[in-house]
Amino acid sequence: MPAHFDLIIRGGVCVMPWGEVAADVGVRHGRIAAIGTPADATADQIVDAAGLHVLPGLIDPHVHLRDPGNAAVETIPTGTKAAVLGGLTAVFDMPNTTPSITTAESLAWKRGYVEQVAWCDMGLYVGGTKTNIGELAALEVEPGVCAIKVFAGSSNGDLMVEDDEHLELVMRAGRRRIAYHSEDEYRLQARKPMFKSGDPYSSHAEWRDVECAALGTRRLMALARKTGRPAHILHVSTAEELEYLKDFRDIATMELLVNHLTQVAPDCYERLGGFGVMNPPIRDERHRAAAWAAIADGTVDTIGSDHAPHPYEAKLKPWPECPAGLTGVQTLVPIMLDHVNAGRLSLARMVDLMSAGPARVYGAINKGRLVTGYDADFTLVDMKAKRTIENKWIASPCGWTPFDGMAITGWPMATIVRGAVVMRDDEVLGAPTGKIVKFA
Ligand SMILES: [Zn+2]
Image 1 (tube, helix red, strand yellow):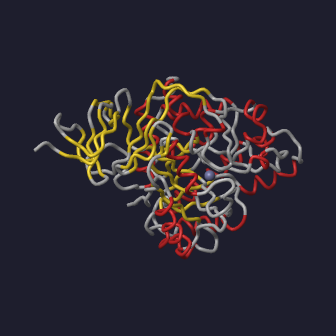
Image 2 (cartoon, helix red, strand yellow):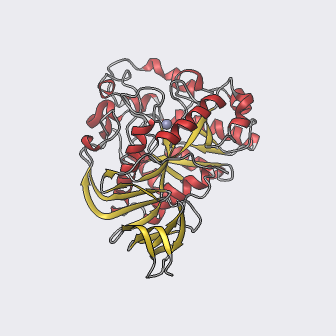
Image 3 (cartoon, protein in one colour):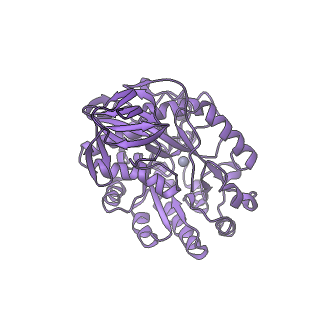
């Protein structure tokens, strides 16, 4: 009897850690059952991958799906639909919703909700606050928790932990890697009176200057070293931090954002106004060049979108009334594929940063590479496809992207989540099948 599979991905080129291998992939019960299937193998479903690269499912480890919050901007159903249209098989969602996810009760609610409505798999951050430090050690080992997220600067309300005393207490509660938003809150507040409403949008990067980010990271590294607690510095945005963090590889991993690799000041502020405003800010070419150097030399572990949509009208407001944060979950993979085609990194390095990297940093089980027995998560890409990113393609209800009009070479053609084909040729298929990611 010939071998039978639930699904065979036929005729593609698999991107393995050791190189590219032309092989058919067989899937059974949502797992990878064979890389290389017998010629006479049969399957319930065949996905034609001729001319395509088969990547392990790509992960965006940094999204804000705003649910609960503002459904006119984004929800988990719409944000995960955007994710699969953009070639992502999993997203890790931030806790600063309304209300925020800081308790076992809110986390349990979110887990149940996700498994009813999400189109891709999800990891969930729990917010570390000054008032839940006693529960963090238990919260971080709850099912589905990718990490505790600490806003050491730049958040509204109860999620901020800005002082060393409380940061140290957070680090001494639990053992897993903590993810940080690192900007020094005291310096941010001290510099605020230097600016006024209606100043140019480029003031954003002057207010939240290099030293705001660098000082935040130096303070966090001192405490991480003192406590021995592993850290993940989200959205590193300065050449100074990238250099500094090289001496903390034993204790710190780091993320870069696609925005900081793609956009540059002052162009982004002149061209996009409020649609270029995010935290930490998009900075000048010196920092973008340093970010690409850090991709090349291995310093960087993960790449995220920091998808953080706001209403279109709100982004039209003058600075600093326009809220910081940009739509990005759907455009992350296309833009990175375009960077690969431009020769800025290899496809293998992109997979390392966007699949293996998040799996390694956060301890996601059975994800991150093409291995028999791992989850059957795949992103199928056409490296030659040419498209233009347009606002009308965006599935998030906010309806805009800062990359509107950008010509792209390289496009996600299919998204497969644990064996279910949920996107093919820019069309969402079937029903939401997302599950909570398991973490070590
Ligand atoms: Zn964020």
